[in-house]
Image (tube, helix red, strand yellow):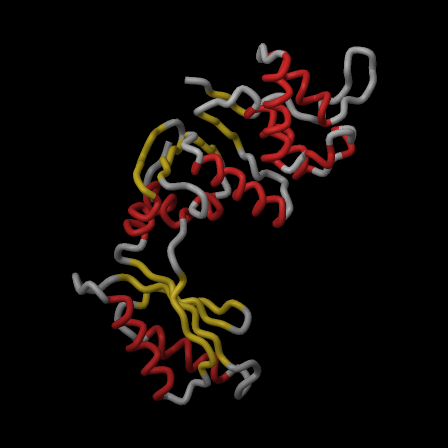
Length: 254
């Protein structure tokens, strides 16, 4: 089964004669290195450039490309010999928001083609949007594996974060002090911190009740409104892979 990982960067765009490589020349060099010849090589180059959207940039020097386009070129290079497994290390590192979204779409399309894509990254919040399963590794130890949804569910067990937003400037600082005091008095509240025009509330589960978060949130909101605190927004923050990582690695040391 063929595989490849992102390696040589399009930044290394000088030929032995010191002439800058174009996108097409860069990809063609690796197509030849993979042993592709004649019509098959041309077909693979056309297919890869169409898939990655590099066709209009075929004659542009690779060193003149943006970071996002260079990542596309590097991805295109790995696809030339049609591997069934791709290993990508920090593929979204340094990319702007649009380039990250476009890269995610390309990776999802590859997965839909039946290719296995393994991504190593510390940008955990983005991985949940494109990965079906993940493995959490710390200090060389494999601590957890499974579907993303299962790991997120485990991270949300027993804890919850709520955000309470108040109307800006209402009653000066006294309303904030009253809101914080009321929240601290509620069962299950473990932390209250002010963040701008909002209060972040950390809850811990009190019982085995399945809908404990909803019940606790309703109790807190009722207490605030009943005390005349001007609440303008109240919500629960969903767990993400960063929470899952912290949950799995909690209490572990080297």
